[in-house]
Structures are given as structure tokens and as C-alpha cells.
Amino acid sequence: MRDFVLYHLPAIGFAAIILVVSSISNPPKPSIEIPNFDKIAHFVEYFLFSILVFRSLQRLFLSSPKRISLLFGLLFVSLFAGIDEYRQQFVPGRFCDGWDYLTDISSALCASLLFFSVRRVKRVKNS
Image 1 (tube, rainbow, N blue to C red):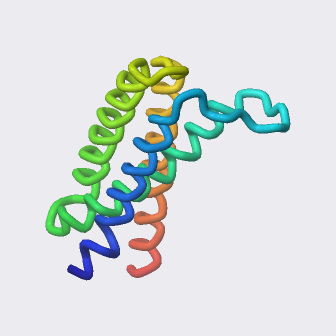
Image 2: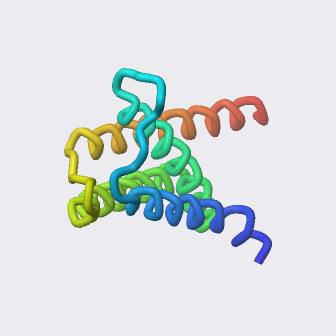
Image 3: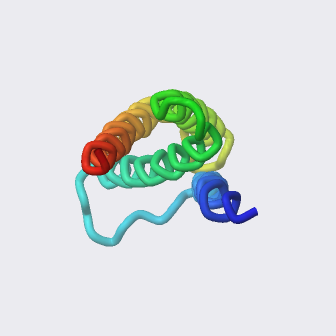
């Protein structure tokens, strides 16, 4: 139960938050004009989500190479982002945007590089 709360529940909770926020019709825009704010928000949102998914899957696949959890994490985040973008076309005031999807995937790739690099540095320090 402790592993579920520490490793899996944060990823599940963040996924639920993404789905709730993307279900809001005509979401409010920031009062300050920030160029490409939508893409920045998508990048940060999916970067954090990816890190949580990688942590969760790494804990599930303890006996497997870390690359396996990263690969499955990238696949899962890609599918989740695609389904979420597709689903948004049915929400009034929202639409499916391929650039948002590419931003989500790009942030997942950046998160995987960071996650993999941090793990490698920790392993080298412990050696």
C-alpha cells in the first residue's frame, strides 16, 4: 500500500487532473499576454506527468532494466496525450490540436532524458 501511495497514486492523480482541466469548456486565458502560453503549459504539464509515470513504472518493473520503464512510460504518455487531444474535440470551446500533441510528446522525451541522466549520475556516484 505504501508503494501505491508514494509511487502510483501521484501519477494517477495527475492524470485525473489533466482530464478534468481538459474537460473545461472555454478555459480562461491568462490576463497577461504570454506568447505561446498554451504550448508552455502543455510542456510543463506533460513534463511533470511523464516524470510521475516514469517513477511509477520504474517501481513496477524493479527487476527490469530502467530503459524498459522509460520505453513503456513514453508509450503510455504518448497514448494518453493523443487520446486526451482527440477527446477535447468533443468538449465545447475546445479542439484537437496536433501541435499540442507534439508539445506533449516533446516534453515526455525531455523528461525521459532528464530522468535517465539523473539515474545514470546516481549510479556513477554510488560506484
